[in-house]
Image (cartoon, rainbow, N blue to C red; front, side, top):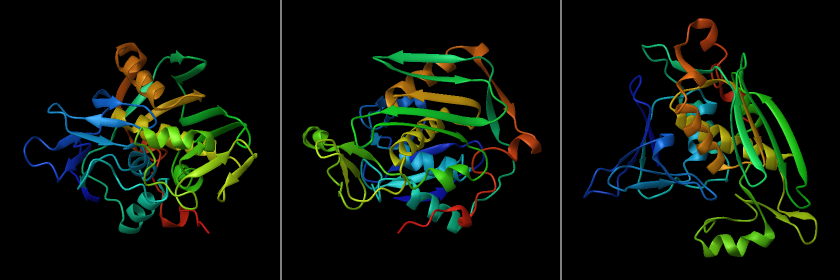
Length: 283
C-alpha cells in the first residue's frame, strides 16, 4: 500500500492497482459501504471493493488528513500490527501539508440515534469533537468505558496503538468466514481467552479493547468525508451501527450543517498539530 498526496476537496480514494479491466477507484465514503460485518468494506459502482478500511481511515483522521490517494495491490490494506499506529507513525514522519483551501467541517445541530439488538450509537451537538464508548464482553475483557476529547493529537496519543481484538471462542468461526487469516496472536491481534480468563499475548493498555472500538469508530466516522464537531457515543456498537448512524444523519438536513472552518475551529480539530512526538512507544 502506498499513500499519496491529493488536492484540496478530493477526499480519500483507494485505487486498486491490481484491477485493470474496470474502474479501480473506490471513494472512501459512507454511502459506498458494502459490508460492515467485523470490518468495513467499501465498493464502487462497477463492484470493485476494498475491505478493512477503518484502520487506515483512523490513521488519516488522527493526523488531520482529509485528502489522500491510497494505492493498493490487493483487496485489503496490510493488517500491520492490528492498529492504526504504523499508518500514523509514517504519515507524521513524512509530514502533513496544509492545502490552499480551508477545511469543511460538519457541525452537529441535533441528536441522532440508532439502535440494534441491545446496542446503540448516537451523535449530538457539542463544542468539540468528542467520543464516549462502552463495551461489555466476557472476562477478561469485561465492561470498559472511555471518554475522549478528540482534538489535536489526542487520537495519536491515546488510541492509534490499540489493536484488533477477539474472544478465543470466536477465532475458528472468524477464520471460517475468511477473517483474521493474517492474524498472529503475539503480534497483531489481542485475543482474550474467555475460558481461562486471560489474554493470549500482551495487552498495551488495561482498556485496550474499548480504545480499539473507539479507533474503529474514528475510522468509520471519517467516511463522512469531513471532520465533525459533536459528540459520538457508542454503546456495544460496531461498524454497522456507525454506518447506519451516518446514513440517518445525512438523511436529515436539519441535523447538521457544513461550515468552513475558521482559524479558531481549525486549530481544535482532530489531528491538527499532531506530530511525531505524540506517537506512542510500543515495546
